Length: 255
Image (cartoon, rainbow, N blue to C red; front, side, top):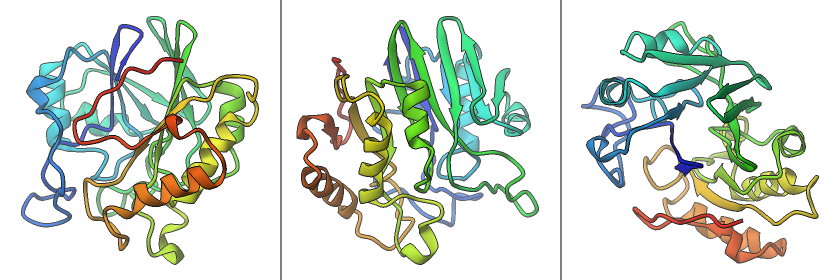
């Protein structure tokens, strides 16, 4: 995302498999829209947590070499992982902690999830979302999360937002996944929670994320956007404020 003159990258994953090795594990259904070498000069990289479909060791190493000036903002205790992979500038945040990088204010926000990278490190590092603000413009990256009651507080404290990125996929079966990933209906509820304390402000654009790349769960790969759009209409939200991006699509966000 190009935000107020800064290039901000979230959870960069470029490998073909979300797994410790590249000969096993979930394989990409959709390739990255552009190669790492085509990225513009990066200013900020936000990492939400340690899972392999969000933290790609190979990509981190390549980005660290190509963009040594970038600042990486990560949840508590995730710094040592990426420092060992060549990242130089690292800021760790707890939930509700914030940092200012130049003119960009970044706040780590609560998420309902878990972390694990290898045997013995389950929940040894934190997971989070990020709200960020620059020159009066505000955006939100929810990271990887199940539904929880603090999204209203995120909107109240860090909003009103111009742009929000909310996950919609990897949710079935619900008996197992409901504590780690939202389903489409819950994703729309997150959006409603985020805007609930700023009803006099224009609605933000929502980009639906976390679907269509890896086959991680049981639902059909094309189900998340269909269910999200259906729920969006059912609750009477402006259809122009929901963005189900086409492969490689870019868009200018106008408040």
